[in-house]
Amino acid sequence: AQSVTQLDSHVSVSEGTPVLLRCNYSSSYSPSLFWYVQHPNKGLQLLLKYTSAATLVKGINGFEAEFKKSETSFHLTKPSAHMSDAAEYFCVVSTLQDTGRRALTFGSGTRLQVQP
Amino acid sequence: EPEVTQTPSHQVTQMGQEVILRCVPISNHLYFYWYRQILGQKVEFLVSFYNNEISEKSEIFDDQFSVERPDGSNFTLKIRSTKLEDSAMYFCASIGTGSYNEQFFGPGTRLTVL
Image (spheres, each protein chain N blue to C red):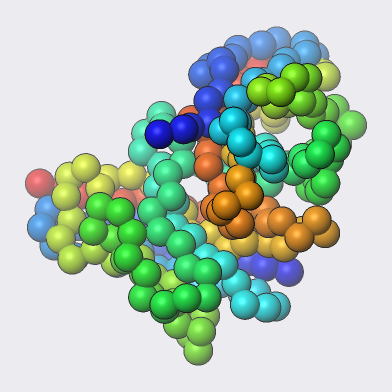
């Protein structure tokens, strides 16, 4: 069974300062991992994904995440926060189905606030 | 850029009524999914659909729920007799053959059961 834990339900940073959103996962085999962002009243947008290629993954809007197998972590970072980054962020692990396709198991989400 | 669309954006219904939530996946995609997100909670998998049949469903997807692909473009989720606890945001997603793991999500339908 797969699971994902987002360690912080809320993170508040000042504009221009670094962002760190933490995620730990458990998986019985090599996982595929994702970060999705959800802006208020909007759908889910893929930020970045890890699928067993490079362990440091770069995504959209300056975000990146590093897959650390020894720590079972996939933390999301950004060097400098922007006001438009304020949103809910979900760490997600893929779950292999009988069909060979994957359904996603979502973390509980981290709400990022960016202060001016 | 192709996108998944969902209608309506907000549906309000009385308890016990039937609702149908509609999704139009990306046109060349073959695998379709429904998820729900109860307010303040995590996104939960409901069901996946391939080749005109359900391929996987969660324990949430009981006999009150059904899915259908009535034509070549729409993918619907029906709740036969809504309960208060069905109030949630419902997301549709689809995968194409070229992106094995990436699911493209629609903007969601907010269902409010009174």
